[in-house]
Amino acid sequence: MRHVNRHTILGHVGNLVELKNVLKVNIAANREWQADGEKKTATDWVQVTILDKKQAEWITQNVGSGDLVFVESRISNSSYERDGEQVYTTDVIAQLFNLAAKKGA
Image 1 (spheres, rainbow, N blue to C red):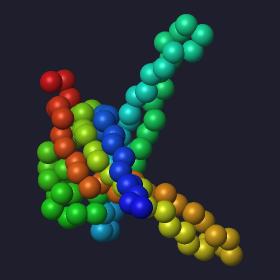
Image 2 (image 1 turned 60 degrees about the horizontal axis):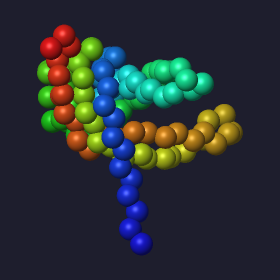
Image 3 (image 1 turned 180 degrees about the vertical axis):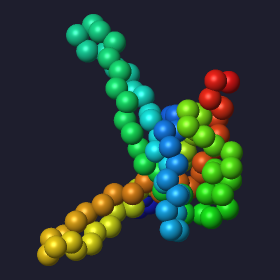
């Protein structure tokens, strides 16, 4: 059996956070649905981790707040101990990161 760990995000960049060895990109992705005959919308914020240094450099030079981006990613789960308790984390790791449109374009 073959498993697939692939997630697609289309949304607008909120901000870029440069850390020691990674770049974090916060992306706002809107979703819409119908409830009781009314159109509803909500925004989900996703923090995407960029591990590839060349990709991170390109993003910091070419992508800014409000730009529309398309990201294909994988989910990575890990855990660590803090104050004697196990803490679980889920990271969204970018595999493909494309600029779809500049803000205002």
